[in-house]
Length: 230
Image 1 (spheres, one colour):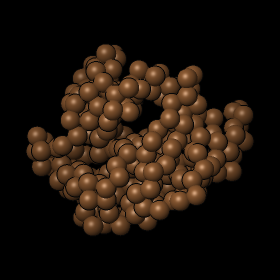
Image 2: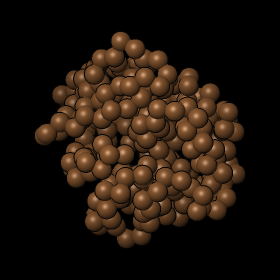
Image 3: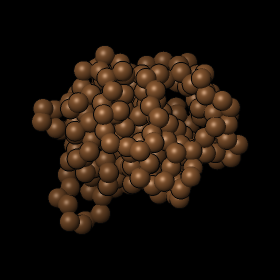
């Protein structure tokens, strides 16, 4: 939490301009969400609210929660019509079956404890409506360890074991190091099933040879998306 409190302002600026993130990350999430008009969406670990504001622009009724007070303060300073933000990560204050969708982007990878991730997944399962969908977007360490993309790079790690520390660096000015923890795709899939989720779908994308001078995006997927249903 302290790390994200300290980088809130710079993180907000860098995320808005991150071409890899928008073209190959958030685009996958958006396609899976489909028509959001009037849908209730929880952005779990919303950070400075960049994706929350995108969801709002698509017609969703958005609730954003984040453990970082500074991130939430920056989010509240941005222009939005109706997003509700809470500087909290525990969902006990929310009623059962409240949301059509829950999205969590680069959040579970900040947690070193499998037990804590399971607790979060169970809370998310509770607040999702029956038939609702949960989407997890993560950096693709499984496929792209040590690779460099336009918006960030993954520092090579010799030890990609469950819960092991890893570091990604956002290539902004100044660069922003993110100290996270590795959990494999299989780890997340197992924890989702253990928490009651079904219909798991895995997705990843590489860049097409288009108008962007991509780096490793052209051959290695920067992100992956897991979609699950209650």
